[in-house]
Image (tube, rainbow, N blue to C red; front, top):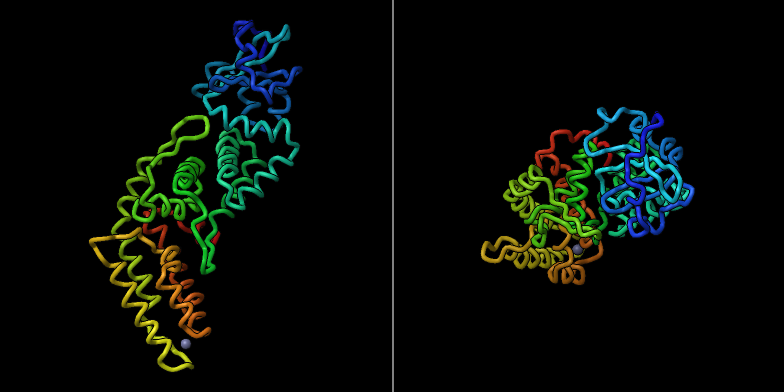
Amino acid sequence: MIPDDPITCIPDEFPPERRDAELWIEDGTLVLAVEDTAFRVYKGLLKIHSPVFKDMLALPTSLLPAGVTVGTTVVDGEKCTVVRLPDSAREWRYVLRVLVVGDGRTLKCVLNLSRSGSDLFLMVLLAYIRLGHKYKIEDVYRRSLKALKGVLKPRWSFSARPRLLPSYALCVVNIARLTGEPSLLPYAMLLCSRGVSPAFTGYIVHSDGKKEDLNEEDDTRCIQATRKLVLLTLSAITEVVLPPMTCKEGRKCQKMMDTLARTLLPTVMNPMSPGPMDPMLWSVVRSEEFRLAQKMLCASCWDQLSFFRVRKQREEVWNMLPSLFDISSDEEYKANH
Ligand SMILES: [Zn+2]
């Protein structure tokens, strides 16, 4: 409860240029001050959605979380509660759109679009998860986390590609640590490994200009996994191209497989021109060599190669990722996939 506390902010603290153009409701009872932006919304609404928020509004100043202050001010002649939060205005804008404006449609739309792999909507999804977790906005948090797990699910089809840009994968790793969701880690950490993603910079600059780094411990884990990723790539490719083909059409297909092994393995193993590590065989199946194999092999052998062998290797590598990146709690990971 805020007693009839004194006006703790100067009345002109939120001039029009600080007010969010979209989320400034004229009869709102609460001003959320986040970075340089002020949102004016309804106090009761936030209290319904977030028990953490409800508590904060009732706590004495000395018990508020670090970086949070609660006070009162006068805005356009009306007394308003002011809560300052140490978060990102960009992320609060995403969440307030759902809580204040979107009546569920915004959330549903973002969940659907992020599932389709849209990078922009993935960033919104991560904001839902971060603030949903921090402020216990349960429905938003739970549904967003489920959608993110959907994005990170392995795809076994022959032409599957990574579902995330490496720079977004680092945000996923950080979110996984923040929320204690180890099942999000292995795939995202694979993409954050410089051996797999040579262009990975270790940071991302968000649309509001803020930089986010991959946390140091996981960056180290990714670097330490390099040697194992090299070996995994070699064994995955070898297991796909070396075993003899059992083919009704006699020796023709086996000859093609010999050619495939002869041309592919030296490239992969050449220490002078190491390509990206490709333990999930995302790139190698798009190589010229594979294309030629598709033309030359009989349907049954191509099926054996592209479907059974590639998939088997991908599944094996996938199951090894938690130990590869030293992620101790991998039970949930396996259960989820
Ligand atoms: Zn054949």
